Length: 69
Image (cartoon, rainbow, N blue to C red; front, side):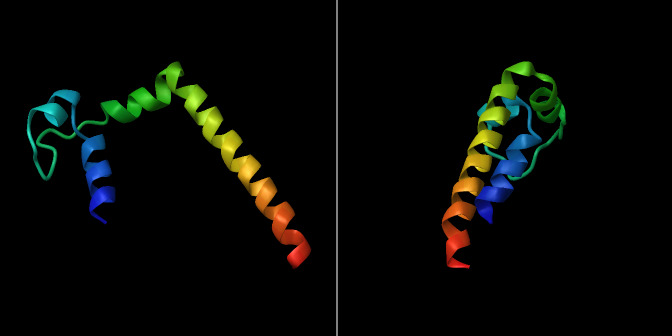
């Protein structure tokens, strides 16, 4: 559970707070990182790649498992 907490904790910190000190919780929580990933077009290719991978994996898994059913 620690890696999940760490990931969520870091997502609410500013970049300066992440690199400056080690804290267990953000001192000034911010949603700026979430605004960036949902509004910056440079992130869209990553979304498309992830969706493509998941769909291909699902199709292959179903195609392999279906005859066994």
